[in-house]
Image (cartoon, rainbow, N blue to C red; front, side, top):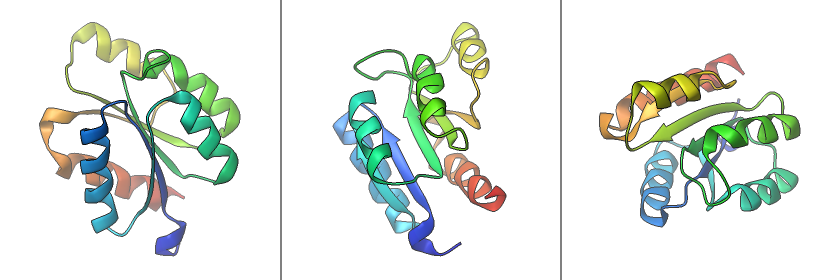
Length: 124
């Protein structure tokens, strides 16, 4: 898969976190697009084909885990990495009940996230 084919969409309502993560992934040679929420993400889905979606738990329209089925209906093959700043046993159980590829706690550092993304593209 060519570098330009490694398309990632980041959905995060926090502009600073979205921008920092996008810069980090661009430096890793991924083609990165961003969206503030679900509505913007759906527009991006209609324009481009993504392989990986990094979806924060808190988006404007609903909880990220509630958006998984909507996004999977648009692209059933998309690999979703759900992110959260905070974790609890209840939240983790709720997130893992969805059809996601990986659950990432933001405080863990970006190396673990990078490994998960590398795994997404190894499987495509």
